Image (cartoon, rainbow over all chains, first blue to last red; front, top):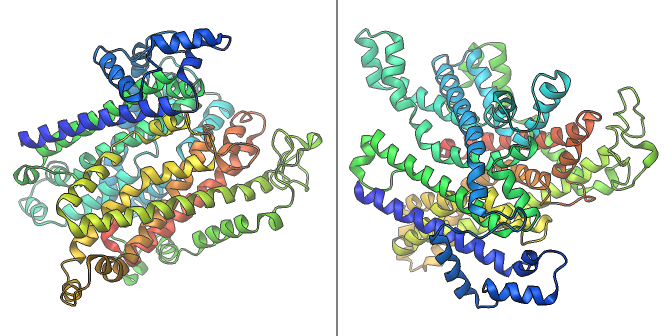
Length: 312
Length: 298
C-alpha cells in the first residue's frame, strides 16, 4: 500500500522531469534562437552576443540544462520575453480561471453521467434509455469547439442572453462551461449505465430487494457503490480530457486561463512561459491522476489486497 | 451501447417503434457507411466532383448565402466565404486533409503500437515493464499542451499533426494488443508452434498477429473519429493545416469571425466534421459488437 503510493509518486516526479527536459531541448534546438528573441527586434549583433554570454546560451546544451534545473529549484523559470514578468508568476496567475472552468464543467459531467447513467439502467429499454443513448452518441461525436460556436450563435447572437467572451461573473462562465461539460460526460454516462446494469443483476442487490428494503435505498446505498466505480476509475482520463479541451474553449471564449496564455506564448515564441505552462499543466494532471489512484485504492478493497497496480 | 448483443431480435420486436427503428438502424449501419463512403469518394475525386476551384477568389460573390436562402445564388450551393470562395468545393477538398491525416497517422501509430504490444506481451519481464511504463507515461500527459510546445518549434502543417497523432496515439494500441497477446500466447497453437521450433518472431508475426486482426480493425475504426477531430481542432487554433489549403478545422476558425453575419461559413464544415466523426464512431461500435465484444469497456 505505502509502496504503491511511493512508487506512483516517484513515477510522477520522473514524468514531470522528463517533460521539462523534453520542452527544454525543444526550446534550444528549435528554429528560433532564444538570444535573438530576448534581445528584441532592433538589437545589434553585439547585444545578441552579450545576451548569449550572460544567459550562458553559448555553452553546451547539457550545461545549460543543469543551469536551467538549478534556477528551477529556486522557482525561477526565467522572464517572459513578451510580458516582461517572471514566467512562473504569469502562469500561476492564470490558474484560478482555468480551475473555475474545469471544476464547473467537471461538476456538470459528473452529475449528468450519474443521473443519466442510473436512470437509463433502471429504466432499461424505455424512452429514457433511448434518450440517454442518443445523448451518449451525439456527445461522443460532437467536437467541443464546434459545439462552442453553436452555443455562441444561439445563446449569444440569436437570443443575446449571455456574454460570449471575456472574464467576469458567473454569466461569463456559463457558456464556456457548457461547451466543455455538456457533452463531455458521454463516455462516462455509457460506462455508468453498463456498470449499473451489471450490478442490478447481481445477487446482493436481489438480496437487498428480497429483504424488503425500499427501492431508493437499494439503488443508492447498495447498487450505486459498485455500479459507479467507472466514475472513479475514469476520473484520471476525464481530468486529462477536460484539461486539454479547456485549451480550445478558453481560446474561443477569450477566457484568461493557462491554455490561452500558452497559446499566446507559442505565437510569440515566448519560451520561458511555454516551458512553465507545460510544467504546471503536466504537474496538475500527473498529481491529479496520482490522487485518483490513491483514492481508488481506498475505495475498492479488492485492489488493496492485490497491492500495487490498480488501474488499467 | 453495452448490452446490445444481449438483446435478441425477438426482444427488440416486443419493444416500441422507436426502439425497433433504433435496433434495425444499429445492426446494419447503412447510413453511416454511406456517409463515410461519400466522404472517401469526395476526397479521392475532389478535382472532378467539386463544382469550382476551392481557392478561386471572387470578390463580387463574397459572403453569398446558401442557394436556398435569400441572397443565395445557384452557382454556390452552400454559399461562399469572406473572399468569395465556394464553400461546397472547399468542404470537398477539406475531406482530403482529414483522410490523409487519418490514414497515415493511424496507420503508423497502429503498426508501431502493435509491434510494441506484441513485444511486451510475448516477452514479458523487463521488456514488458519498460514498454508499459512508457505507455503509462504517454497516457498521462497533457497532450494538447505538449502539442502546442511542439508547434512553437515545428512549422505548422499536415506533418506536425501526423507526428502528434503518432507520438501520442501508439500507446493505446500497445496497451490493448499487449492484453490480447498475454492470453493468446498461452493457447495450444502457440505451444505447438514452439514445439515445432518456430522462433519468437515467427510465432508473433505468423501465429499471434493473425488472431489480432479483429481487435485491430475495431481499434483502428474507433480511432478515426478522434483523429479527424484532433486534426480539425489543431487546424482550428491555427497550428495545423494553413489556409489557403482548405481543411474543415481552418474553415471553422475562419467562420468564427462571421458567426453574426454569415452563419453558413462555420456551420457547414462543422456539419461535415460531425457527420464524419459520428459515422466512424457508429461503424466502430457496430464492428466492436460484431467482431470483438470484449472491447466494450473502451
